[in-house]
Every structure is written in structure tokens, then in C-alpha cells.
Length: 400
Image 1 (cartoon, rainbow, N blue to C red):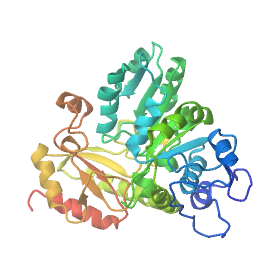
Image 2: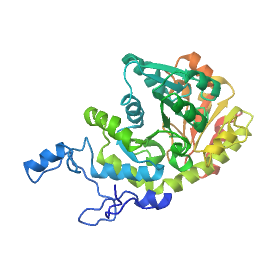
Image 3: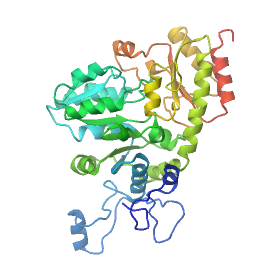
Image 4: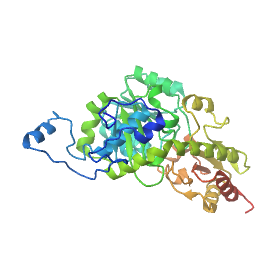
């Protein structure tokens, strides 16, 4: 891959790559990345078409396989993540599923952290076993549980860090070492941290997945996902799976995600600044029984989080007094903050995980994870932080 001028990958810094990385200019020398809204491509002759389908030439064949706008997004994500290769797909969940299933067969074994987003939990607990794949869950914070589970040969390990919604943090370097000793590839969902706050491959991860719908777009416009790995994994496992099953990212969404990347560093910095201020505010409120934010010293894994992350992120969780009734009362009194299950958006969004994102988990599992009836998840946006605090204050006020 080149930078659009024929040169090899440049050694630019992160913010420059976010604006310029992977750009392919057409013969018109456009400033903004071109949007190639095409399903197919034409050939000069039959011999060229034959060579293309034999992979004897490097060219675009069909936008289900590859597209110039999507390729620009993939290359920019590689530069940001420090990965050899990437493939973009239609959503974050498509990325999670494809990264796992493309490398697994009946009789294989997967070990995963128990603290997962609801749909990720469904893939591991319900979907993979239908194809004869053994799945084992562990407490992601407990190295002994990982060590015991990985004492047997294993093909894949999967976890989120920080986890959704409890912000549970996993020691990536330690788990990657154990996983590799068991013969497993490590797949990390890095959506809460973004590649700006944490790069899992620097800690030993083999594959990183994102819901690009979140901070990468960051403005509630487009669905998207991306899988990053070494070229061998992409070529030997992922490429053929995507090519023949078709979870492709639309060129228009890829273009929106490219434009989102240009401002992501600025947005994430403000997200983190606002989230820290809001977390400190909520921790001081008598109506809040428990505050969970990796950037706070009170977080049970604060030191581990900051050894892996450069900031605490944009998402926090807190437990409101009064259980479900107290949580619903607070949600329903919000005036500025929207009730929504999305996160990483420019707007502040709150949700009740036990009845939305994690409602299909068995109650026993939710209890074990600490996703109780009083827990709320808050994705802190880019509004003036004083307005966010004031909205939370009036929503939580028992006298109001």
C-alpha cells in the first residue's frame, strides 16, 4: 500500500495519518478523498479480466471484495493501529464475528472473558457452539482462571478492555503470553479505548476489532467495523471468508468514517477530559452508590488501566440508589443527555444496560458481572461539561 503518490507508507505521526494516511488521489487530483460509489469495474479486454480473477494483477474487481474508498479507510486504520493489514466490514459485530469464525473449525476451542457486550456474549456462548466449537468463559481480571483455562490447547482468545459496560480492565500482556503458549490467537475488542488511547498489538494481541460506528465516526451517522491483523491472517483466513459471505462496508460509509478520522484525536481528547470531570462529579454525589471509570483512582484496576491506556476514555458506569426504579427515574429526568444505546458519539448518551444492551444475558450472569438494576452507562459527549453536570445533578436530585 502506498500513500497515494506511489511511495511506501510514510512515517507520519498519528494526527497527520488521521488526516492524510492512505489517501488515493484520482487523475483529477482532488483534495478531499474521492467517493467511489460503484459496485463493479470494467476491463480493457478479456485477458485482463481473466488475470484479475486469477489474482495475477492488483486491481479492483467487485466492491464486495474491495473498493478504493474502503481501501483508503483500511490503510488509514492500519497506520493508526500499527497493523500490517485491515479489512473493513458493515458493522462492529460483523467485525467480531468474522475475526473469530474465519479461523475456527469444529472441535476448536475459544476462551473468552465473561465481561462482554451482549451481542459478543451471544456469539461466544450461543453461536459458536452450534458449529461444534468449545467455548470457555473466565473472569477476565483473574489470571489464575486464564491460566487454568489455557492449560489446554486453544485456538482463539477474545476479550474487551475496558469491558462494556463495567469498564473492567484486562492485563493484555499477561493474557497474550498465556494465550500464545496455548497456541491461540488473541482477538481484542478495543472500542472503548480507541487506537488513540490504547494499541493492543503493542501488548501482544494478534487481531484488533472495532465498531467504527463509535468514536471513529463519532457523530451518529454511519455503521461500520474494521478488523486489523498481520497480512498472513488476512490472506490465509479472513479474506476468503469476507469475499464469499459479503459483510462489506459501503463506500459511502467508508467515506464518512474517513472524514470522522480527521477529527478523532481532537474529539477523543475532549471526550476524555469531559468524562473525567463528570466521573469526579458523580463520585461525589450521595445518590451514586458506585462509580466505575478507569481514570479514577477509585477504580479497582486504575493502575493497570493507566499502564495500558493514555487516558480513561469516554465511557463510564455508575450505580444509582433505588435499583431499577432509581435508575429509570434518573434517565427519564434527563433534559440534555439522550437515552440511547450507542456510545462514542459527540452527544452525551445514557442507557440502562440490564434492560437494553445486556438484557438477554441470564440474570445470574448479569449479577456476576455487576450489571445490576441500578447501573447506568454514560457515554460522555462534547457538550460543555458544566451543562452535562447540571443535567445529571437535576436528574439525580431526590427532592426534585
